[in-house]
Image 1 (tube, rainbow, N blue to C red):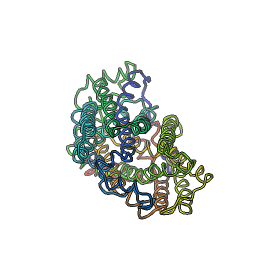
Image 2: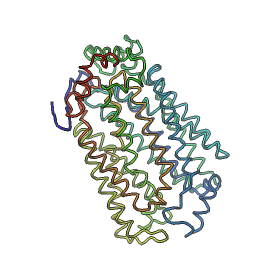
Image 3: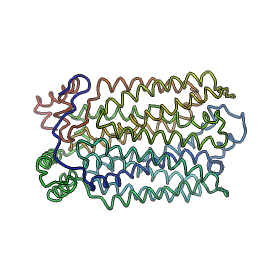
Image 4: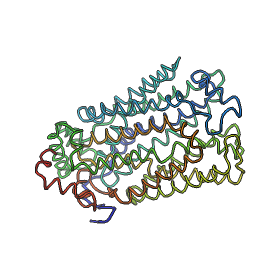
Length: 510
């Protein structure tokens, strides 16, 4: 067992093959990420379409039409526009608590099916919106879909995947997110050219395609053995385990899941159980990883891309080039993460990504502080190319580190009795701070200007230090052996596990 800051990377790897049913099930389940990514990519493009702004946000529209009326940093500073974006995450935050119950009682598959229905309903409201109220209702329904999907899909992927490639299969979700963003950006470019003022409706309406994919996928796939066994369906769970592992002798893994399920059934209050001392390490890690992810500053980079690409002479097509290039880089980053996550490990990618993002923020802040003023843009061609390279460096490093790995780590570190509640906390914290950033970012940008990049750089530095000292390595460890193999061997967190074992009262409550 490796000691130090990283913790162990070993554990019993149960016998089994990488069967076609596992790969197909994971791809279908991960389509929930396609919908999430499509919504992220589509909302940014739609809010920049003149026809959409004229109909729903006329104040912002007037700012765009009169050059010099506002600072370069303040053109999009509007609370209503920010609410359109952030309302989705507020709904996701609330929905995840209901999704925790359905994930535990009805199963991972049924929760994904419910997410698909929410996505379809939200798409209909958005595409047919006649006023801002319909638009917000649609966003709230989409947010419920995000809350249910982000609750169920990472758990589904972690539980159905073989230990040795659990990280890679789990990151299919993030790969689908990045592909969804890229597809949405390409669609926005095409629909923005539609005459007649209804291009934004086409963009929002095409979200129905990934919504139907997730719904269809949830109908086709089977639930995970862990979920079936936890709900008392032992024979069905063992049968599914044999199918997904491709072997007959699954007794060792079945017995471990059965024991974890027995412990889970003894827990009557899952959220109260999270506060037990033995779950403290997982809870702290999960909360801070989700908080830190939103303070990497990825939104600031995405917002600035069109302005910076205009300096390279792309003119009216600036949004296309900037969005597509950064979208492609993020997809490549997710693919790199899938390839290396079970080889290099989670810690290495998070630390390397943190260092790269920190340097990118500092470089961009220096250049914009010198050249981009309130009413003028003095970036020359050479500096413009440098900034574009730095933007791609930032987006790529986020794509293979803090983008996907925060979800992966949170989905694999909790014991079965706390896993559903733990995933609920994961989604809740992520959506809470996504909401905060989405609602406040444009106002922060207006007041802080280029210094907002230094603000995010400070957070990236702090989160990298946090990972170096406090995040143990989880690659190659069976999901039901995390306590024994990971937390009991970590230099800091082992005191919580050992104290729980030494305290019969705490152990009994657990």
